[in-house]
Image (cartoon, rainbow, N blue to C red; front, side):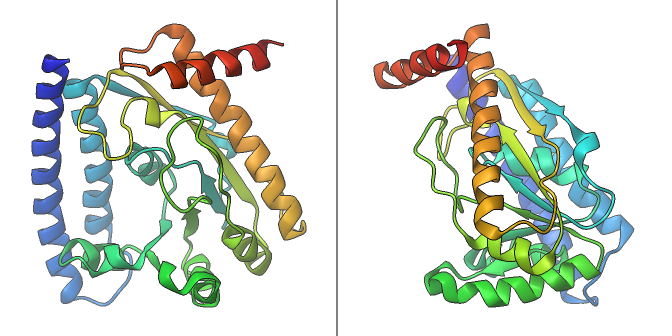
Length: 268
């Protein structure tokens, strides 16, 4: 426990140092250029993702496994991903070509980091407006699709602990209906190793699985139901697989009961 805590502190120090340096550099550039893709900037953004995964692998022992990249369409689409950890962003970001993440408006107001995020097609959403924020989000999403982006959204709106009660919001269904593009579900188990607001990170294989796209043209409710069922089924399978292989993190009695129940349900 103590050794892993020390390794986590070293990771966080290097991660924040790397992030701050890149944010200052890219944010400053963003202030003095027109919005749009530029290869050097995107190369640095991808470096941020890959370098973070490198630090996770060799300092705290979190390896990265990605399955099903072939399911990402070449044309415009929505990537609807489970969200358990900051790892999700770094694992998904470099694989999509030109992603456009939907993120809290407050994040884009952070000096340098927010300026850079805006320049990289990030779509802000003001959660304080509730459903009233959706029309503005749709307008920005349409513009992003026209620029050749793939829209990345976490349907539950925030990070959730593994096996926590789900809360899929209708916002992704509204965007799906308006854009008329397929949705790629993404299942993952990253919260087992890098939990929300966790001080200590635990070794293991964090896995993301891109699943076959849900076709365009369905009713919003039908798509959302299919998306939730698909993501949760495969996320649970990834969680159970990691549990069977052995977890190094401490497991509470309540969480172990959930894991054993899941094991019984899936095996039955």
